[in-house]
Image (cartoon, rainbow, N blue to C red; front, top):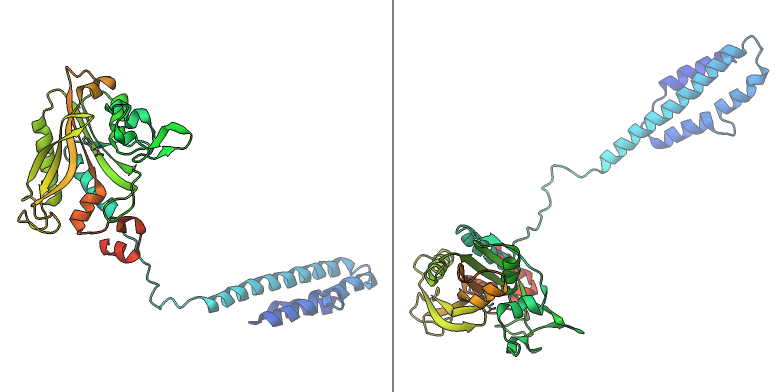
Length: 337
Ligand code: PHE
């Protein structure tokens, strides 16, 4: 009996296989509860002469450990081999990933932000859901101003004071609330107006606001800043012109045109044969806006401007329909990679 167990030790030690099925047969042969060699040997233990019991027991235990080890090691190495067999062929060319691209509105916004940051402007942001105070009252809008009409502004139902901002000028108010002059900041962001969607208008669009407040800031500073901006964005040969306009929060106010970037000012369809394109509104911050927001208008003056990013992107990229910026049509977006 002892010899038989010792022979089995050798047999198990030399056992080899490269097939999982054979390994399973090996397991059954030794460990099966019914008729397994080890199971039988253990039940024969009681018939062994008592002086042999100790040694026999030891051999039996090592045999059992050996069988279990053999099964474990063979099994894991066979499973690794198997998964290697299913591994992809690493010499094949890889899958081509579709590259995303920046949205044209982001491209233009980043470029504008970059130009103003060279002049020392920092970025400020404000909430899209605003209150009447920041969008209108603090900006000198009279109570009966048409912009406060439901036709132009999205109000939150049952909360006539809460609305979606119609311009980024609301961020001016927040900046003046939180900072002391000198202030030099631009505020890019989404704005909302209750307009019918067409090739030229949308109920959501993007603006960039600029605000500069310090001692001795004059209209000359405004004009020079905007000229620099226009030439950086549209090319050194670009000219600007300022036409008198009206905004409740600036005085004097102006609208700025640039010489048509497509025909160079000669006249074409895009500039409607005028040679000029309107791109932004601007002016000197109204003294009562400064005062409302806690800035002494006898010491400080400032200028502000605001422009629509879509409008500028349309001019820069020759896009004829504003809706394209919101539809995320891949054939359109891929042109900006
Ligand atoms: N907020 C104005 C608009 O939406 C633009 C503007 C900004 C005008 C700052 C003057 C100064 O049309």
